[in-house]
Picture 1 (tube, helix red, strand yellow):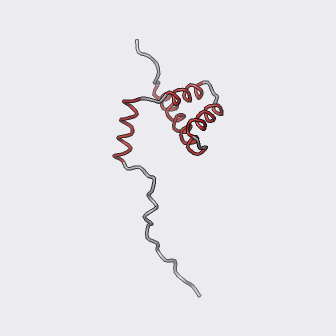
Picture 2 (cartoon, rainbow, N blue to C red; picture 1 turned 30 degrees about the vertical axis):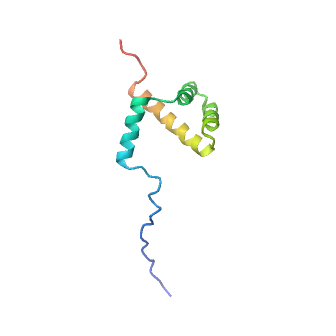
Picture 3 (cartoon, helix red, strand yellow; picture 1 turned 180 degrees about the vertical axis):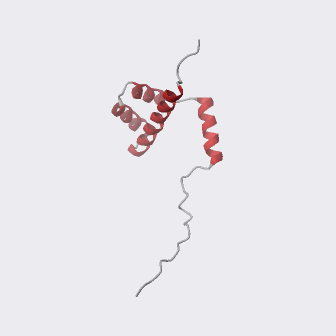
Length: 93
């Protein structure tokens, strides 16, 4: 016989790990004020010269897990893309 699908309520665990707008803003302010850690600067330098695999290996060594390293690698490459798009990193005369 035909049955109708039951509408499921959202589970409390679903939004776990998602950052709120306030937390996202606070982290951006902290990043802007404090800058990057030394290992993040090295990852950035490696990405600039096209050594993606070496940058990922460095992140893996510093962050201990491959999943965290992939997230950091993606974050740093996004920062680099944004800098290139806005013309950042060039000194004003």
